[in-house]
Image (cartoon, rainbow, N blue to C red; front, top):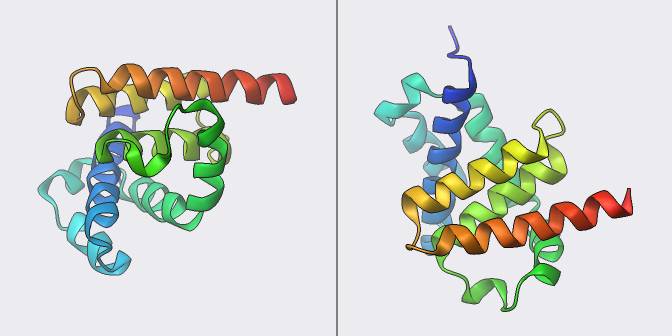
Length: 141
């Protein structure tokens, strides 16, 4: 039986951030990374279907995600800390493609990931960029 609930999605996001970080740093094979994370002890208490949708979705839509983020950043994406970069990409993927996730939840979860794994002030950057992108998107609709 698949675990359900908001905590299982939060754990799936945590695993997706770690998988994305690894992929960004090493360009390892996506199937290999996915398999290894499905074997992670945290996987039993996580929504691994959601993990796969996030991880694969970010990688598959990377150019579009980065293009949507760039106008709200004061530096190039490759200059952003890898943890904050992964959190931004997950947040923007959820804002853009996961329509069942409220925008406030997508932004807050990305901030929490940056707080948990990023630099001391990195979460502020993630918050500012995603908040600006979200507001601009709402104006365009």
